[in-house]
Amino acid sequence: MKKANYASLLAVGSCLAVSASAQQAAPPATSPSVVYLNQAWSQEDREWYYNFSQGSAIITYDLYLNLEVANSQDLFRSDANNKAHGLTPQSASANNRDSLPIGVTKTAVSETVKGWPAGDYAGLTCAACHQGQLNYKDKAIRIDGGIATAFDIQRMIQSLNDAVQATLTDAAKFDRLAGRLGATAPDGKDKLRKRVESEAERVNQYATRTSRTSHPWGPGRMDALSLIINRTTATLPGIPENWAMAIAPVKPPFLWNAPQGLWTQWGAFAQNPIGRNFGETLGVYLPVDLSSKSPAEGLFQSNAAILDLGRVEKQLERLAPPSWPEEVFGRIDRDKAKVGKGLFVELCASCHNAWPYRWTEPNKHGKQFVLVGLTPQTYVGTDRAQIEAPKPLAFTGELSKFLPPEFRGQPFLPPMLLNALIGDEVRGLAIAKLKLTEAQLLDLRGYRELPTPRPAEHVYKAAPRDGVWATPPFLHNGSVPNLYEMLIPAAERTKKFYLGGDFDPVKVGLDTTATSGTFLVDTSLLGNSNAGHSFQNGPRGNGIIGPLLAEQERWALVEYLKSIPEEPGRVTPFGGPAQASLPPRP
Image: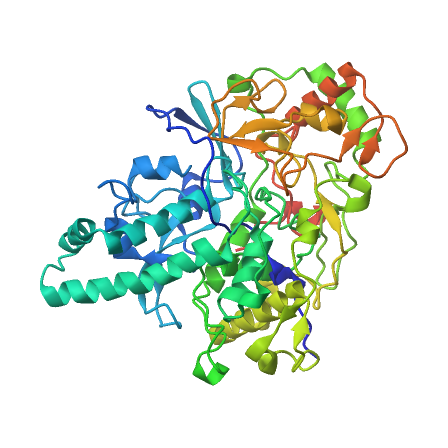
């Protein structure tokens, strides 16, 4: 019987939402100089990653290039507007002929999918959420595969919705759009208006239905899991009863060592890489038909970019964690780091695997994977919102007729399971069209054994810490501003701090003394708790994970975390230590 692939639950990074209020600051007037670290990628690797299409299609491409923002005549795609949303502008290149910002790309929909006529669209790609930049003085340190701490995807989508709605209601704004597109004749204008109205429905659907929240998340955070489940079980199949408030914002996980890890995602529920990556695209505007009456009429058809999702996974296999740039942030005290390493081994390494890592035994394909900690939420005590966000049951509606036999005809299923089953059907259809060989399918699955095991419930993943210094703020929901505060009693942590601000190389994280950020996060709000992972006196569990540390112990641990990886450009071999001497997979 066909099994649900839990890997399709999600995450590289989905998005969006409702209100975009909250302390917003203008972007800096001058651009800092960019510093690239040795993460074993070439500039060609970076440019492809920044610009490849994963199949996402938000709005038709010509509209995106010519649309004005809601409250002025500036173009929505302008550098100033991109910076206001935390996107990084780029110059034109072979992979980006129209100078789109990092993470926004041109997508071709080659065959019409219900709601998406064939044509070119603007969409989001992995780098929108998984490309970091640390700002310090006059430097911008790029972190490939890191956390896009400045990108406010929720605000961007709301702003796009406002821009499209303003174009329909402001005659002068619509006429300027028509002029740019050469649609000045009456019949041309009429056709354009009908097209904008159709686009407006799709954009508004995501901004006001799929991603509604009680309060803004701020930059660098999104409730990716809820948004994917809302889109696949409520919005696209037309079952509004399945909608759930997106109450659990998380920061996008960093991507180095993800292909090598046994489990991925904050909740440690994904193994199969194509299921994981495809699940993410379902949340970020992948054209997919979940409302037709049957597969013969288009149900489960999509604009899946399966081969490019496989390509990006291979490229991530050779992405190294970033090493601390001493020439920018200052020298590492190696003696202090050595003391910190001993403390890490004693206090942290049972959950956070340390180099050269502990690995699984070889599977039937001869591959090993890096072990990751699976820490019960009740033990680590961090925010529970991701566990509580999904409803207990979701209506299956007409989709129930086309689910695998063991689930067919059931009127209700847990929403995460229903999402996984839908993802399996859509992805399976897309892969079947490619007519891949068994060897190609095995490669696409990252040499995982199928069916993948059922994931543990109500746990958080504790991954290796190499390069973690470059990924503030910390905890899965980004509620702790720096590494130093990860080592103190949770009650003593900063309660409010700015997201999207300057880097602090002393406490290693966001600068809590300045107001250089664009959004003030309040850890008292739902989904924002900074509790748990606390070093304090008391019995272990219920949020206490270690003893109260002396001040010098905290600083020694911080120094050690700055020092790893100890070798710049060190790539974890895919498939296990024995693979290190073999050439990278093609």
